[in-house]
Image 1 (tube, rainbow, N blue to C red):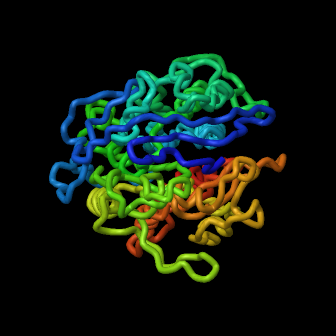
Image 2 (cartoon, rainbow, N blue to C red):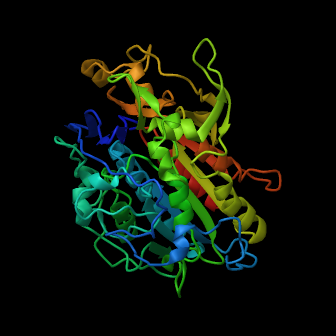
Length: 491
């Protein structure tokens, strides 16, 4: 769980994907490796039309700019959303970089239980679930994409994970291989007839198959639960410059084909639930010249020279005071005027347009780099009440073995230092994952841009909480999915 290594490091014209040993399921483990090659990065390109070899494709040019660019004129008028109508559209944005094996498995298992909760009251709900990845494409990643792989760029991935099993092989000469992230929850692909799973009082678009216990809890799971479990695992071969905010926006583009037609994903009368799963800082890039601009780079301790790495996402994305004598930063907020997209691009659509103009209920669930939640409310919506974001420290890496410092056993064995980590991702870890067996499973860094967008939904005009934050380092995501269910009950 959590961050295990930099997704991509660009040294001069060389790109490296790496990650140490990772345990995916109790009793099984695989080893990661490195890959190197020459990257020819364009610095003038724009985000391409959303396409994927495993997803809906389109030539719609509006996706180049996204649903908003300072102009809401072409967004359709949803009118007033009916209160309590039970229509809920759930968007999952899943980090598919090399460090996200266990997290995808944990989310798939938690989603199985959530589907079961909803189905108990299916006559009161009509639900649609769509899945996309955090990969918006990046010119330095393109040369290292496996054959047949295309960044989703916000488009739905609607094929079962077995048909994408090669996506569960990482990058490098000795790649991490984790097919069990798929097969342990999806022994055989069950897929919807549309780019999303639909179920509830109006029926389902999932084929009838025998019930099967796919999450190992001794309870048979429905065809709908099986379909969701087959869609959630997205693989570990995506670009390490994760862009969850831009992927979310493109997925919700009202001009996209999956949001149009007789049965769109984004429905006029439905509440919207956004769930983002990621372990690094948001890197939604507006200008790819950042990949060639040393002002955003950290120094590579191996060469003594600045080089591009995932640290540039933090450096360009967040401004802080400090650090103080303990290495802790304060007054951190999303930066403006950098090559990354402004967070106002995303708050403008979610809060100002969907909520403010269209009166559409929007709920945001950020599973990212914060400390573990230690307590949840025992009444709906079962929100986190202690630990988690409340305990978040934005700080430098600590150069000592965990728990006194931040270096995990694999780091120490490999001779990796805090200086190496600072070069790789910039900021220190927000959380360290640890299984009940005591095994360390990795770390995650803060994603303050994501949190800022999430909390923008909790303004004074909305009486209830609408942003819910949990730790990607948690062993189970069942508690935060319980919060999703709790919040749905009041929509």
